[in-house]
Image 1: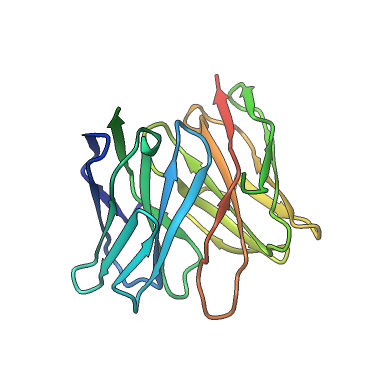
Image 2: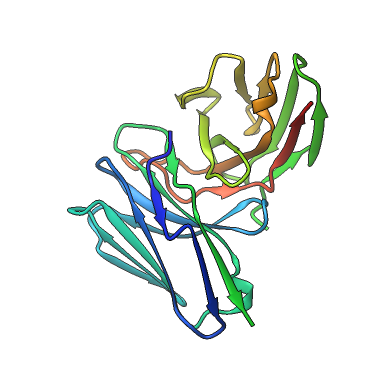
Length: 111
Length: 116
């Protein structure tokens, strides 16, 4: 069963703008990860944030985690057409060996 | 490129048949997980193998089974195929370390299975 729920389901922006995607989940987690998927291909890992962390950066990516609200956000700054893809959050729980993905946000960046 | 490969790329089967999908993990990884991704949905966890033993299973029936070999390659077997089994099947390898559930996973490109 899926745990994370991404919001919005779809997002369309112009090149150069920032894109923000949100993820909510239901249970206590060990860590939360964000992945990107281009057109039904394999997923690419973007960033992992542990439950005791609040914010992480990687290049143009910024991820926040609020465990009290059970939510996370992914910010892509200065977006490019190449960022067009589906973005998924995935949660890993303590003592549970499944990783639960949300349904994803479909991001379109127009040149 | 993640170093994780899957074969075949595409596969067409008929209802009731059996299928075997293969995955070769990234060098040095001790864990492989399999996911089913229906069109427009996120990946759904099928099971995970760690050191050749099943180490967790999602909500999938027993006709979904797997193997992991000493060289960390892996197979997903599905018996008695149903129409709803049509999906993209993804494997992902990772390095499982004590006390940390799920480090970064490296995904293969997937196998697109169509059941007619």
